[in-house]
Length: 382
Image 1 (cartoon, rainbow, N blue to C red):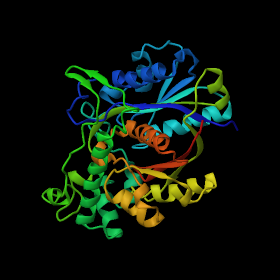
Image 2 (image 1 turned 60 degrees about the vertical axis):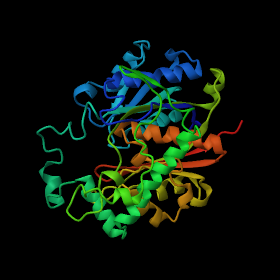
Image 3 (image 1 turned 90 degrees about the vertical axis):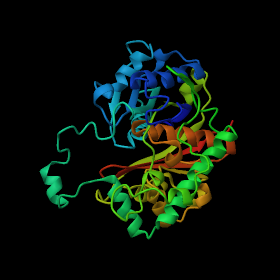
Image 4 (image 1 turned 120 degrees about the vertical axis):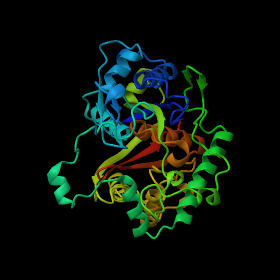
């Protein structure tokens, strides 16, 4: 098996619902990050063997293989293929894993992985339409459970004894960390400005400065009466895209590129589809075992903040240092553009690792239906 490295990682700003990116077609938004990879690396796009693109709601503006049409929107040669994958919120993290597998096996040499979601144009749940996506056998197996992620978040909060105050404190901290990261320019090197009808969007739109637990206490529960989950301690509905360039160290040298990180290990797991969002817990254990690392070896953890109980339950079960968790804020503050989130988290983590000289980073995503991806990368020192 060949060694695999990431040589570039970029993302758009994450726009808020009906915000600065809402007028941009998903294929055109994807083209922004695809072309940013070319501009930053200086490579000829013709060397790229494939583009593997994550997208969750593959209907409307995101239908008809958005991965392929993103390549064409970027103006790349028609000879470059593209495909679209859906592993729910982990779609673009899974795109990375597929890209790594292609390069590691020797079937491909240079692959782009990433994803997009413009939730302002294709709302969450749009792909369902009038259908029943789970089927009668699944519904019968789980006693006609609704498979509602918000209810799953409520169940997790109950199981781990997470109070509304604790969840709101975590959510407030996410905004505080994200605002501090923006102020010190931590995102500047990874974000690609997007030219829109209203001007250039250069920064994540979702950060709400001055958010406090007391302010969040005024919000009504979103999923059940007397519940603890509300809009303020849940991930934001967002628009965005992200992309990474994957190859081997040898190919990187051949085309004049310097690796950022080395791929160490990746896994995907299944877990209880009713709790649904607890998959990062077994996925973390599994990926550490596969990488031959201890939790204490890892210097940064990116655990997607789908809902505040997800990273908090993960912390409780793993015993990780909370100071290393989502140090630049997470999806509660920065947004969660579904199909683009996995590559967006990876981009954020890679740049943070380089900025701080962190050797190992671990990223994990909870996903609808009770699956989870986890990936470990290692900083390449020059």
